[in-house]
Length: 501
Image (tube, rainbow, N blue to C red; front, side):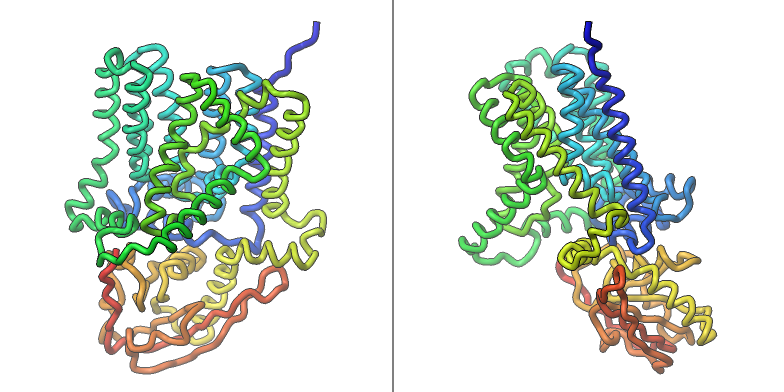
């Protein structure tokens, strides 16, 4: 008798291998934090109920992890890595519950092959926790629908509450489940459980309500602006609208992985043909998220990552369909998963093979990691400069929150840095104490920028002490040049006052 494959073991072996690869990537000396990661870390140094653009969970997780591992790159990215394991394990459990251990395993493998998973499980962004808690909430809600037990609905509510504290778009789970209950003719039997679920979920809004009540509902205004509202109305341009839509469509297909698209289209066609209820349940979250942002793309630009938190259940759908197909299709699956995992690994891992020394590949890697390079050398230069000039008591500022956040992280004392608004939309730095506190004081300010030669008319200082340009390279190749200026005594502070959110 042939022994059945140990799919849980296969799952953990592959998952641990990917975890090791991500740790090796994080430890690469030429790779710094992504600028958004640095911003969310800085939030964790200024704990609050909520922040200008996002709920507090990303900062809370950073606060906990860096308390254990220190203010290090691994101390931040360990959150994404662990949440990525959680996403994969939920997918495995869900696929196993719906079908079999084999399909559970392939569901997890297909998920781990998707670019959307690589982003959420490698870089600690708000999408990391959102994607995890979305998957958890959808899984618990299905168990509640299937078994009719209130306990599962309560756990779904808890998962959704945490998801709302990661990102407000988690609220899409409400219309998804409501519509599914109606379509599946289960509303009458499950209405009380659904109400319990909603009431528990709404606890996740409490931090946002407290903070926005205290801060003139800035987050609401920000979200309206992102959605194309909250500002001056512009005439609708049909050409631009359709250009944005097709750009959005291409980005979403890429986030599933071009190598997995045959599986996706085959599984999608099968759902339309069979109208199987559990497969409709797996398709609906992704379809509703995609449709919501597709409509929004006609009005404003959509970031490629915004809808993909809800795409995880597509991996189960694809695995269930492909495992029933011919040997040719199974080969397509194996090659698709293999290529979709191998390519990110090739770019993330150190250059063990020396293939990344080939000029086109090296240029592609440099372009991919442009926003994650040069900040640690910049911080080291500032430390040396302060020692040389004897200006230990100084403040650091830049015209972007990206630079300001990165320098705060990489400077050894992790000082509070500042942003001089020179034309940007409002952000968290606008709500914190700024350069106005230094007006008239005999203190030194160090301006650092990728884009500007000086603070210009936005900040007038008494004296320029020193300036230089610092070339930054990536693996021996020129990347960009940073401007550093050392100023004494801020005389006048005239920042740009943003009207947009």
